[in-house]
Each structure stands twice: as C-alpha cells, then as structure tokens.
Image (cartoon, rainbow, N blue to C red; front, side, top):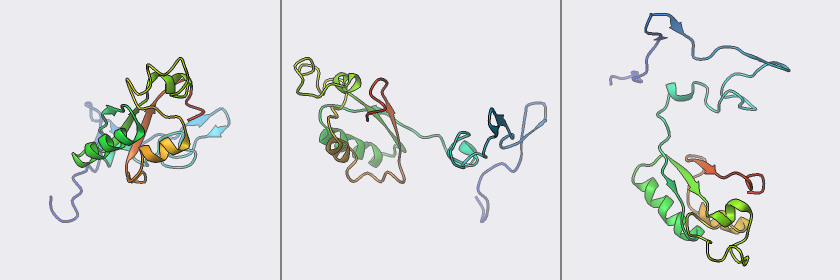
Length: 145
C-alpha cells in the first residue's frame, strides 16, 4: 500500500452497480435514531462498523478457575486473537456459587467458575480491556454478572 492508501474502498455498490451508503437514517418509535458509533449505540459501536476494521476473532474459552482462564486468555491474545469469548461453567450460568451442594461436582467443569467481583478482576487481570472486545455467552444470570 502506498502512502495515504488505507486499502479501503472509496465507494460501495451492489452487484447491479447501485450505490450503497455506509448507513441509512432510520426512525424508531421515539423519533430518529442516532448515527452509528454514537450513544446509546443502538446502531452499533463503530461509525462504519466492519468497513474500517476486520471482524473480531474469538475462541470460546473458559475452564476451571478465573486464574487458569486468565492464563488461557493471555495466551490466545499473544497468538493473535483479537477478542475474548467467556465460557462460564454451569453453576455460574444458573446462579449457584461453586461451593453450593448442587454445584460442587460441576464447578469449573465446562467453563470458568465466577462467584464474585474478585473472580472477574482475576479473570481480566493484565488484559487491556480498552483494546480487546469481550463477549459473554450467558443467559439467566447475565443481569447479575
């Protein structure tokens, strides 16, 4: 690429040659929606989404303790991964602490066990969260976590 060349197309079009805008204005029930990249990010967190950046590459990962999962996350980032996807163990997914009698046999088996804020701090210790996107695949306890 030459100086000033970003490798990005200047114009986008359909296969029929019809021009494609980066985004189209839209309205919601309360009036116009904000532009992409603007609060409250209803239309996406990046102004031009993936026209300016590659897709985030994530491997679903998490096992045993927050410390061991943190080590795995750091390894994956060193290998070029651009995002993290947290796999939670079953007790965490249904809201049990690891020491609950119904959770003991399952704790840390198919994902990371998260029982407290300290576990989250350990999970992401040393990971530059301003630079790395994180997804968390969890349902019932998502509002709590």
